[in-house]
Length: 360
Image (cartoon, rainbow, N blue to C red):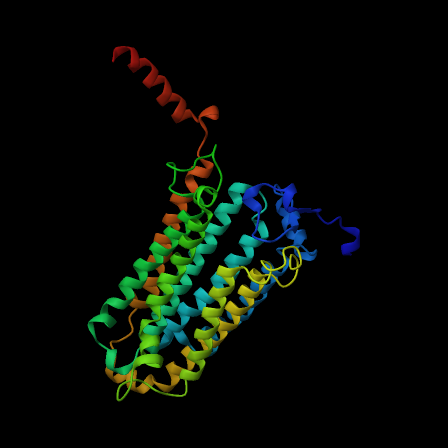
């Protein structure tokens, strides 16, 4: 069947605009003005994005299945103690889905590319909040339960989610309207200072990750004696922590393609490995969270603050709304009517200003 369909052509790095270039990837680029149909068809041909898409699209369905199991078979709606797990599983579904969609449709245009990855950043930020909500409910060490840090943990994590989304979006283009507009659609920070743009994006996700994991790091690496929650779950926490740092290493170093540009364009480049390690790390994290939830349930129900709708689903919904506002603000200049093609309101404003100028 696919043999009867004409698959889109692929290009080299010299044949596509700079905004589509990837570090040390020489070939396998799709047309920079692909249609939505071409983007979907590219799923079934080998490009430098194909495995980026599938390594996140397929796990989305696995995490969705896990979410449905908790919802339908474990009756989570009737058990408030499971609500943090629901938020985490929703975030674990959204971030690979947003990533796979971003990689699929990012070649429709330069503007579409930026907006696609804005949503990708927002989904990753929400995933960090989902982790924080479950850590507050299940993972935090016994001696920190009901502490000042525990009470402030979720509000700060919500704020970090919004900051993370904004900083990640800023790392692509800069400040809306001030550094880019419909006539200037380019990676402003990355064009003038590529290392700064990359550093800002790393910071945008490293900061909330490190904050979210303060309770976990203290529990498994620092705490000794009574109240440290030293149980069999810690082994799983070690695994997903190690994978998280290895994932960050791949994202920062662009290995192995940096050592041999052009040799890993289609299979084996760092972003594909980044996706795979990230998903495996999420799996280990989910197992650790579920195990802590079961093992510590009785103690937490007796000593920890009650799980509320506001601290779980409410916090998640607030973060989503605020992140969408941030994405809207950063996306608006890309589609604002240019001065050459003024909209009715802009034209009216220009006429009024023109009449007022002689009077002044």
